[in-house]
Length: 464
Image (cartoon, rainbow, N blue to C red):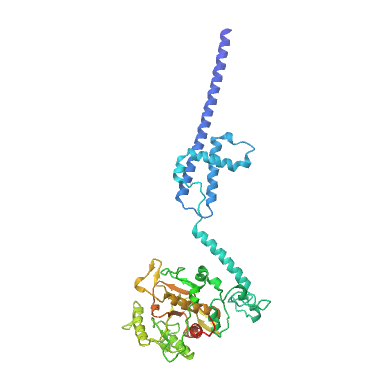
């Protein structure tokens, strides 16, 4: 009996021992799994840190990445410190996450070494993105200004319409209820002395000086810049451009204006054997006639600078042209205006034409060389008259916007000099393109003659 009882006690003890061993083995497996999970989370954090430091931050994504980090840190914390996660702490979850994140950061030195000392500092915003937001804000302010003036002809709006829609304005729309001009309340008209100098009606768009003080606004509305050109704030200043007076002394007894063509062989769409006049030289001849009728003494140089031994060669056309015009200027020092008339080249499907004064008219483009690239000035192409050249084309463009909306393209800036240095009142003018007809190009000379007369005309007494 005693032996049987002893065997039962022994069997019971062995059974309990086996159960304890099984429980301990199960607990060991669980601990191993939990350790593996913690290791996986830490490895994930390290990978996240490495990828975040390797890829530049994108505006708008910084907060998302930070939140992901804190979430992973919190998950690790819950595995490592389950006692810290209990009911009643939900409202402080973010603080707890931050605390646990700090504890885990301290335990993973790789993270601090990779991220550097500024890990907890908020990222600085992208300067380019800041400028974008500033420009958007400025654009909104100008939009509000246009809306205020949309019922007048001040900014080109007519009868509540926007600039250039062809509406008709009345004199009363330019006045407030008290009879005060709208401009007097909102600002000063840019180039007002030029607009008063002409007898042409303002059918298009005028600007306020306050608008043109904004460099970005001027560049957007007046210029197209080729990648070879530099056109910084130190170069483009509308206030400076409008302070210059290009009026000529009305003495037609001596030559005042020279018109020439660096590329005399530029033809128009309807050029053929029976219509050999359909070149830029024929267009220049018509402009010469129009200016002479207005009382100017004009020399039209029809020399060929882009043809050598019967072959078209424009590689040195500007060099040959410079020799020719310097000779003419030496013989006629009274010449104050030098115009190089060109025809542009565009894609065959492009047709640069607008209806001006009821006629199909080729659009024109004023062209300036800056003698400077983004890398700096071109020393061998120095132009002491660059500021005056830029001001001259700017005033012509400003008047065109007011009197002939849609007639001019943006002023084109390119990096070289293009012989514009010979006189302060020098301009290179592109008339239409190879897809325009000769008639459209001729029609373009009529508004061009009016614009030149406005900018070059004698300033009346008392005007500024």
